Image (tube, rainbow, N blue to C red):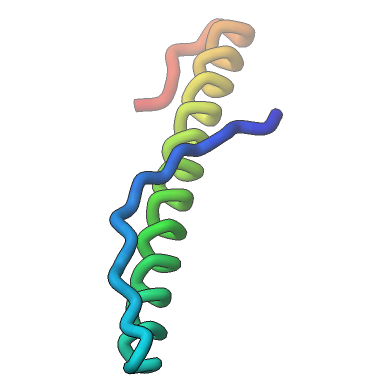
Length: 66
């Protein structure tokens, strides 16, 4: 299953006359995007795991783990 994740970040101002600032801005942007993607992935995996746990519990007649 493929899920789309919408990531909203503010684009940093790139300094054309200072490459170090441009690299810092790009690094910050990439970090923010990756953090958002990882958070959404972890959330999705947690929801999937919880759903499977509940499904197995019902199938085997046991109460879910707490």
